[in-house]
Image 1 (spheres, rainbow, N blue to C red):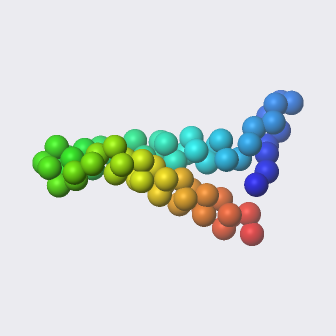
Image 2 (image 1 turned 90 degrees about the horizontal axis):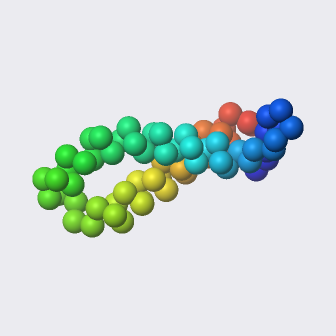
Length: 68
């Protein structure tokens, strides 16, 4: 992990990754909300949490592959 220096303020890269994952999560939930309303997904809170963690892992993996 690391940090970025933006005009003297250190911003952790995990914060940037979390924000990108949240934006990606909001885009994906537009499609998955239809499945929740149709009854295909039973526990929507657990599903949404798992989906966000998955998006965070994907964004983190992309950041790691870009750095190397």
